[in-house]
Image (cartoon, rainbow, N blue to C red; front, side):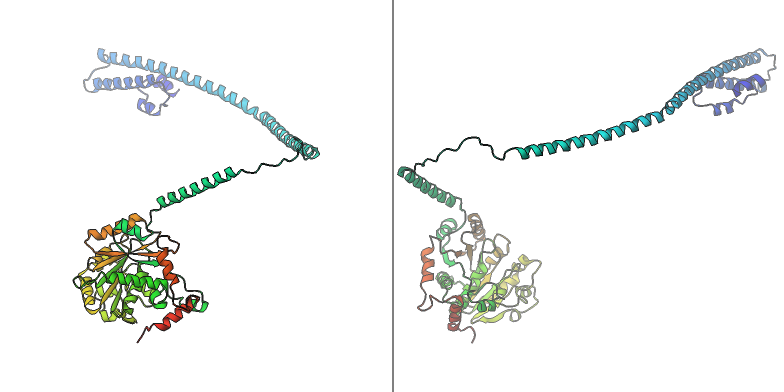
Length: 481
């Protein structure tokens, strides 16, 4: 070891202990480091005695200090040799381990050859197994083909006549079926929560039924006539076929509503609405307006449904300009009102779709327009959105004489109809009544009136088809001057 050689050659004083400490391996014994530090500390004390205190070599303290340094040097040599022995032992152990690893590596080729042999044997065994299984399946198929197709489990016996049902059983079965049928009918009636008849309207809503409108029939028996009406939306029943049973139902609606008007409380502005969409309020409003116009009154029909307007399609007119343009001050009434779309009937379409329909309908401009139209026309008919869907109808109803609620028979829930009427009543709006729309002639509660409408036709028209009756009706009504 270099440190021992240096100490033996030149002594501790000639050795660079600081360099030795810096080069020591981290695995070196800690005792070596401690002894070197002690030697360095005493060498510093020795130099201090010689240089500062001027002690000569024969001074007892200096001699004692050098004796301690020599002792520590001897200890350092022993510690170094001990550490070297430990390192040598480790080297011997590592050499033995290296020899064992080399011996094991020498056995690898033999083990690899043995593993390759085992893998080849496994492949041979797998192939043998597949071959045996295929032979087994073939043997099973052969055995199944050789077996008989039918096995007789029990011999057949002769047939014996079956006794017929007794009269009592037939009667009991009929009674049971009748009871079950009646019970099912009552149960289904109990589950039905829709408004179906006039009595439902009067008992649930507490308002009169102003009209019962039957389901509108499609006048498409004539292909040529149906093609002529391809561009229209809802049919104008009153104008197209005045003899249709639905037209007579609208006349009944006009009569009931006009009888509610008096000199003290005249009805000038009527709002048509419904609890929900697709209940026929727009069809009812336009046919009611046509009916009033045929009576000789000056009528203005307003499409106030600014969200989903439809009256312009029924009248085959443009939607713009219209009510929206009037409310924002973009047009004048003479520019937006379509005069004489039918005799005595003017029409105000909805106009472009606004971003704020409720605010426009609740403006002072809308109130002023209604007052202005009431002064120019005998009747103002307004078609509005559904009551429960948006607030537009509730806002408009406050500025009219009253509201007519249109209910589709058999489809509108009772709770929805009650909520719609209750909402209008809370606003102090007068609800004239309800129109029961799309009533089927199979409805037992309304069948008498509807069958009367359908059967009571002028002589010579009962056997005509739809378009023939339309042509005859149009020939009897003057639409334009």
